[in-house]
Length: 121
Image (cartoon, rainbow, N blue to C red; front, side):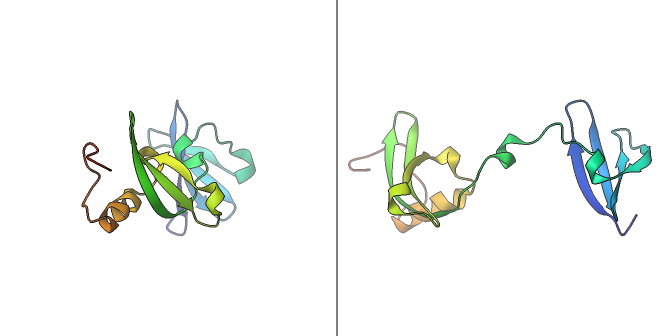
């Protein structure tokens, strides 16, 4: 099976590994035993998925500003490929890449977000 590509399939009851060989998948159950036959892609049904990976994701062109709320900092995001009217305030948890926020604070002369706002922050 050296020519095969690895993929992982998961369900709540069974973790399954599959090797893609040509047009068929060779499946392995959670004990490591190979299933008795190979399966075409049309016979495999995704029964669970990762909601984080399945949610839509947009690329940030730049963080323009920040504000402090009772839930912490929010950042004004300019979205790549969208206009100024689509800018939106987003909590830090909505950013996939923490480096985006770190670059924003670096441009403002800080190494990270202040723990609490001071003065005009």
